[in-house]
Structures are given as structure tokens and as C-alpha cells.
Image (cartoon, rainbow, N blue to C red; front, side, top):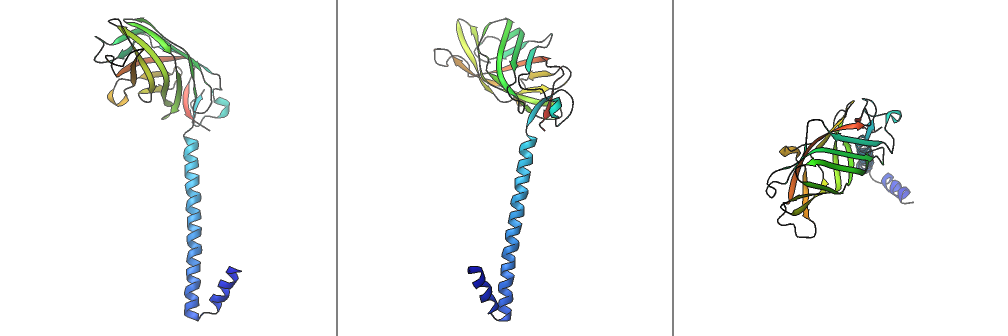
Length: 236
């Protein structure tokens, strides 16, 4: 009824005024259509961005990775230190020298196919120049970055190192500095460079944090033994 009354009122106006009112109604209609189109375009852009941000572990060099070539849930990931390298934890300040281990392994299974993540079932360090023990292995998540490579984040990890009779716990969440390079033998590299440093929060078990250092930098290069090959790809 309101619309009919408005149209009737417009018809009863003098010619110039009626034309002006009709023009205003047309402009309001066009503005509404433009806003609707902009909203639809924004929704499509956001939706596309969300889909492209997904990550999958792929058996071949394709991106996005087709479902047939994705590694499924439950895929076992087994990695060990690259031959001739050492895993180094540098607490800078408290320990007399960086902690070095000649052997280290990481094992776990994926619990998702997109943005793969899973609990670490086994994390080991051996042949170290300090006493090193793994308290909590934590869990990992892999994120696609460029080409067939990605980054790795860790959380819930706790490792103790001892010196001068004092035990310090390093762990927490590592959100940067660990890269995954896809290939027939993929690699996982924790870097010490300033741009890619991997700080690990330090805590003293049963004591205050002092005199343990507040952080440490971890350096290690692992070779992924299984699955083989392994490529980090965009989702479908």
C-alpha cells in the first residue's frame, strides 16, 4: 500500500517535480544494485582466498593436489637428522656452549588431510654433549608456502637440557623458522637466521625461570624418510 501511495503521489506532482522524484527513486535502486554486486564480489573473493589457503600433502608435483594423489589421514611421517649434521639448541647466555646432538628422530601420523597436523608419537635426541630428555613430544602442523614447499609449526613440545646440575625445560610453541622443502626425499629445516629464528620458551621445572635462559634457538635439518616422495601443495 505504501508503494502504491508513493506512486500515486508521484503521478500527481507537477511535471518537473515528478521527474525529479522519479530520478531519485532510480538512483536509489541503482545504488542498491551496486551495493549488492559489491557484496557478492567480496564474498567470492573471500571464499576463494579461504579455499586456496588449504594445504595438502601430495604424492606428485601438482598444485592444487587432486584427491587421488593426496596422502590420506593416518599417513606416517618419519624423519631423521640429515647425515653429517647435528641438532643444535643454543640457549645463549646460561649454558657454557650450545647443546649439540648427533642423532634425532621425529615420528607421527597425520590426523587431517587439509592443513595436515598430528601428534608426534616419538621425538628423540641421542649422542648429545649434554643430558637431553624429551618430556612432551607435542604436535605439528604443516602450511603450504610456495611451489611444493611449506612451513611447519609446533606446539606443546618440552625438552630438558642439563648443565651444572640445573635442568632447564625448553618448549612451548614455535611459529616460525621451520621450513619444509618437498621432493623425492623431502627435508625439514629449522634455521637460526634472524629472519627465520625459532625461539623456544624456557622454563625451569619446579623452580622459577631464573637462572635458566628465557629462550633458545634450535637448528636442525631432517630428511623425511617416509612418506616418499612428499610435496606440500595447495588444497583442491
